[in-house]
Length: 292
Ligand code: ATR
Image (cartoon, rainbow, N blue to C red; front, side, top):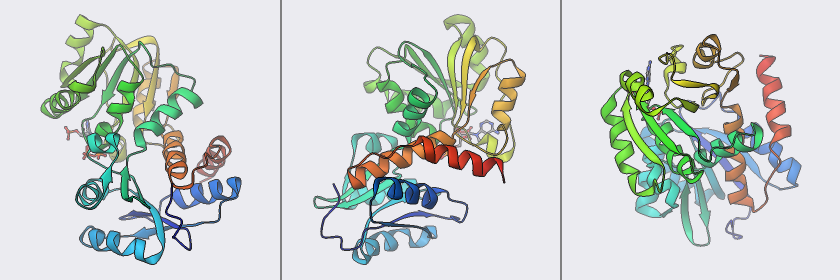
């Protein structure tokens, strides 16, 4: 719950660059919908000034901020030093939500819960007992592993261009895997792994390949015939990754716009104690994107 001594309820997203951010629009819509009085702005913060800005913001009446590229890891270090990390943020090694509360500074990572809410609620996907393939072993991937494991899949395989990074992540999360088979491997080993252990029901692209307009080609047979392909990136048209999956015959496709809205809703709930409805905001953003 937010510190009641915050006179004006200011919130912001900090990034660099930040002009493209949809977060102010999302949070303004949540605030209007739930009748919450708050302001939310986008603040461009250079990497050199992040720590100073984080120290100033609560003194300026800010009750919380979202953190985006490229600050999530440095902000995590800041919270580790000056506040408290949630368990999911501690393991993610990155934060996307900070709150200055009566107990002090709290750092959370709502990306993974945002992904789960999007997959399970918006797209009606059940992950329990499924075989999930997670592509990428950077910050985006690391941030969603714990929530994915909490959904009780039968297997979670992290595949990355650089195999060692995927193997290291699988090792890091091994204590949290419960009954799930958790493996890390190189993208180049996927064909052998699929041949020996079976195809995947769900593939999630957490690489930044789509940013550079590149796709990732999965060996034939990697996915089941009824598989679901998800890209954390989003855009006006299908991302290169989703386009490649569609070309390969995958029928269930979704991009990361829903995750963006859902992670924001989890942050909003943390700050304000009320849960906004995400679907109207998602519809509005989808509409805005398609008219761009
Ligand atoms: P983020 O915080 O967005 O995850 P990152 O930590 O730089 O960013 O990680 C980017 C991820 O995308 C990595 O897993 C990277 O693979 P490597 O570890 O081998 O570098 C992956 N990636 C980026 N471009 C890619 C491409 N063209 N093909 C496959 N993987 C790619």
